[in-house]
Length: 511
View 1 (cartoon, rainbow, N blue to C red):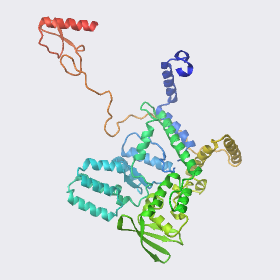
View 2 (tube, helix red, strand yellow):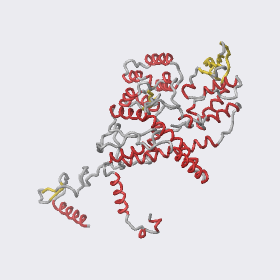
View 3 (tube, helix red, strand yellow):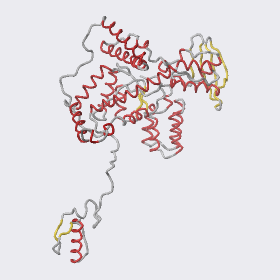
View 4 (cartoon, rainbow, N blue to C red):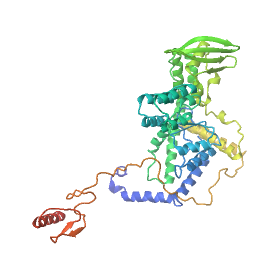
């Protein structure tokens, strides 16, 4: 401010005045209480911004929850609230770090969801409890290798005998949760490539740029909104690049690659192209026919004898691979692309294109289907769909001035047209109640306590070398020589030496 004004004398106020003004503004915002002001702010946001998703493999923030503590009851309330705003849409997979309270809450609220433990946290747990390198290698294989359930159980039984794990409490507890971490039980589940909580950790890292410990609850939600805006802007940018640019074709299967580039977003296309390149490592073992279905048996270079079967029905356009790659990731594997190459297919069959990974995943047609829900939920879904569509309108209309004028003219005409059909009605969202929400009580969080930078070596007395005091801060007491000495300090000096020390200390204090 001093630089903009031309000097400190021209600013017109002191630094203390600025701090006082900011503090006054903060207090005026929360005159009804911090929690009450935050709730009122969120109610206003609910009317303008009811929903959010992403088809670019970016982290999508559906909402934030502020809980009283980290107990089963608090987590259950949080997940039920999320389920309510998502119109009772159950998630298919939930990934957590293994917290017991969260695990129980997920079991109660999302009973049909696949609860997966974070791979990074599980590896860390194994490293802390297993000292044998060979056994750690086994756990790493069970965590990531694409093996069948019976193969995993056989290897576990062998490991129990080899490493004497029969009486290991930790090993028995881990085996009891095998459905939550062993890939043999999770390889058929669609997880969109997510197997760790690193995305949540990434959100925490970004949130530190927007949040401070001194913020109140109202400032908390306002700054979280700024963070969400940043995420949404990134989504608009990648969506614009996916539509406005075409990747360079690099493989020999150019028609299939070009089809993938026109259908998938850039982020997914990169993964799909890797599978097209992987066709070179696939060998055909035999080809059989059963009615209208062709049975392709193949193996991969460097893995002879490990056969993989792909079924293809040309009439129905169906294709199924035994590696379960499509069920897990949502796009064709290299074995499927090998069959497409062998059948001379110019395009990827429509049945193999998962809409959530396409450029048109958020097309307006996706929201036109009539949903059989209650009136309030239907209004919420319609509002959210329109809000999502308008985000793209805002982005395009702001690129050039003529596009801006065109967008504004269209919005005015559309609003005038709709006003002729719809009468003004009361807001469907619930308004704030008469009761006042009081600020919550601060509680201790889980985990190790945070270290304080101010902690260090305690200062010691220069005379007795004991901590917690200095020689000048001692309560004094009378000695046998009639002088005062610091309590706790001992000395072998005679009376003359003590007088000299007393005089020296007095002169030092005066100086």
